[in-house]
Image (cartoon, rainbow, N blue to C red; front, side):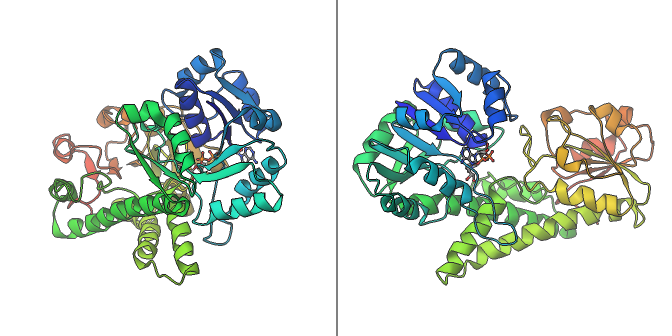
Length: 435
Ligand SMILES: NC(=O)c1ccc[n+]([C@@H]2O[C@H](COP(=O)([O-])OP(=O)(O)OC[C@H]3O[C@@H](n4cnc5c(N)ncnc54)[C@H](O)[C@@H]3O)[C@@H](O)[C@H]2O)c1
């Protein structure tokens, strides 16, 4: 099939590349011309394991085309996927749909023969209806608007695309399901569930899924606080609970507040949808509040570990992205923790395997080092913020020159008994050590 991905970010680039790897001809469009120029030179704009090789292979085979020629891409494609961002509107909690509607306005003039327009972006319920209305107003009838939300996770995006738990397609026209089923057939053949529903249903499934996962994380994070007081290990509680098939063990790992480009904005977006219908989604509201509080709670614990006066204390942070194997900083809890420590007068340094972060350039007392050894050497406190593989077996005793250094592990990456044996002053999450 011939496909056009509008928006070549985490979702558009990964799914476009994977669709081309299944033998489809894929046109990837982005308004960021630099991105397109770089992709044509083989430079990948994001950090996603395995993506570079896959892009190169399909680009070379001529199946994956990076272009800024929207008219040609739309003209040549049967299915148009909208993969642009849907962030939270500045100063409000509602979803900013301006990128989606900009795309609709652009393509409405270009559609000359029947096309399927797919919202792969996460959009509030009713957006598909709205798109249809806009297109109809332009006297354009050559289209079907459907919803096919994306569930891939950054850092594991290629695997997630290839082996999805389910593919959700929402349409008010049943004929379209067959075309979409044909497109996804190679994945269905390997066991992916093809789930069809109404367009509005599909839009809500995406928000409901993200809000539920965010709730699981927040639930275990609150229990972790209780475990610390009761001298119980939260990991044992997670395991005990998660072994129940009705609950499931995933997303029950205590740690920092959830972040990233989806959960924070999608939980807020869902609440706004509820409010508009006079439905009080009180659980999701308290998840948002609890998650917000957690960011500061974990930052403030540094004052318990190092003492109230953080002035000139040397703190190194290992990993700053919201999760490992991505360069994505959107809503990472490090964006709250690091400025908090700097404000208290600490001298903070950081290292992240995905590189230096532009967003931190504005801070005077914040330094980036390009390896673990350099960042840890003079620390009073090392904070493990993101559990990248390369942090799993660090010999802290050897690396840190300050004999009295402390280690604050926000991901419970290290074995507590090991740390006691090594005589490292070790603090983690949801265990009895932190009080
Ligand atoms: N990132 C994820 O893990 C993930 C997972 C599932 C769903 N989603 C959803 O997918 C959507 C995209 O997310 P993302 O993380 O890929 O965003 P992103 O910011 O990485 O990429 C969006 C891209 O769209 C481009 N763009 C914006 N307007 C455009 C236009 N008019 N024409 C062409 N290109 C345009 C931008 O330049 C950018 O490159 C969002 O709705 C998000 O909620 C994201």
